[in-house]
Length: 100
Image (tube, rainbow, N blue to C red; front, side, top):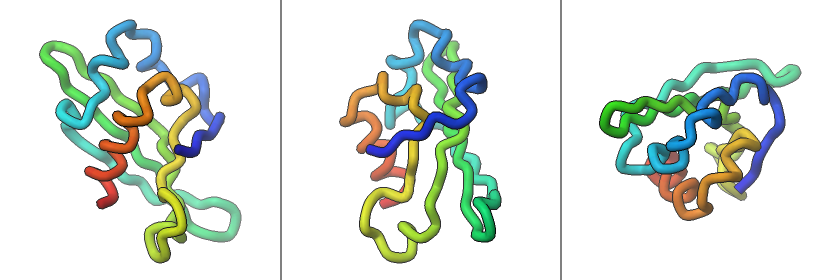
């Protein structure tokens, strides 16, 4: 897993003590992909929305490296650093579901 430290002030989902239990492959409800620019080349940002019972959690600003989509050397997803609190198994399952 790779992590980045951009946009730490937007990681509000961490303030909810149940975030780690809501963020699972089974509770993934939506994914939103937004094209972005990274220097002179293109990139993308991915937001994941999870719904578990009465709670909703958004994990924003997952970076997507388009080069890794074309020729996979490693995962194209770069998670916000706050996601290091989640288990590697959860992140790997989410990656497999999003980018098989």
